[in-house]
Length: 80
Image 1 (tube, rainbow, N blue to C red):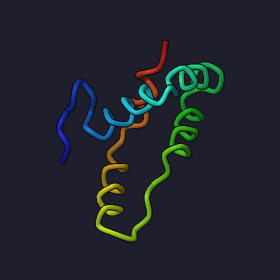
Image 2: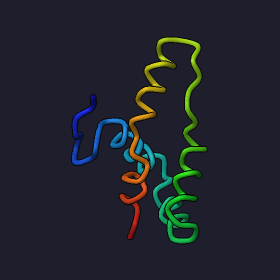
Image 3: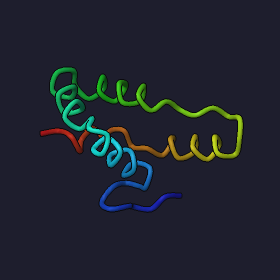
């Protein structure tokens, strides 16, 4: 299982939140959250970072990590 990481539920959740900030999507995420709410924002974020396929060991590992992401925590990080 994954342990807490830098104040987040786990490493995958922290990594997605960090990537959003580093990719300049932070403001876009905040605006979408205000305009459309949590559920729509989560759906939108998940469409930006789709689940990998199952063609290799890397895909299996990425799919496992993707399943650990706490999308609610990611979105909460951008709530004003």
